[in-house]
Length: 222
Image (cartoon, rainbow, N blue to C red; front, top):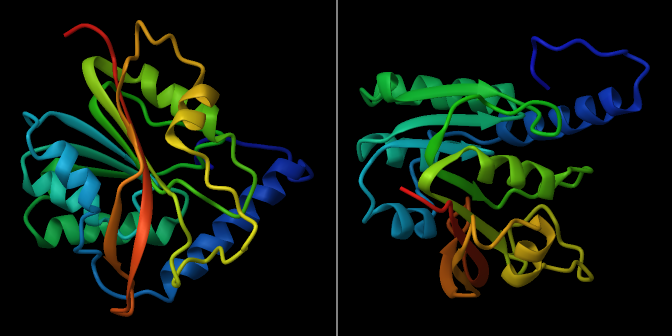
């Protein structure tokens, strides 16, 4: 939730925001380190691009934000966890990239960062709490400059270290995600929709083969 907004404390949505915020605060409070690892599909997608303005939705420990900043991007990093946001801000300063990183706390169900972007990255934007994900991602698509890319990477399988170990969970395919966004394909054509597999390393060093669901959209023009 954006701290500049005020809400009725009796509003159930406020309680949900508090619950989600506490969950992710606890999550990041128990993790140490600066989040040095970049998600490989972000590096693969952004590596060939000319650096510009990027938005990292759900920045978490900050690996993607820091990688982008060190490769010349101006990055806006957002997360619902104030702890995660502050750690990303501090780590960027330590690496000499503080002038290329703006870190903000947002409950994306209620507020969205301002600006226009050449790249918006949504890496594993999953949560155990209700989230209007399709609306958030549509907003992200509309925040792109002409020619800008929206990269959505979702879990296509459950890793052993995932917080969600529900054996019945459905992992929407890239095609299903694109359909849920309901964007005009003439204005936001799909550049990539596939399900690659890779060997991944968890936070404690364990490894497993995982499937990612990858969707890349481009805003027409530019």
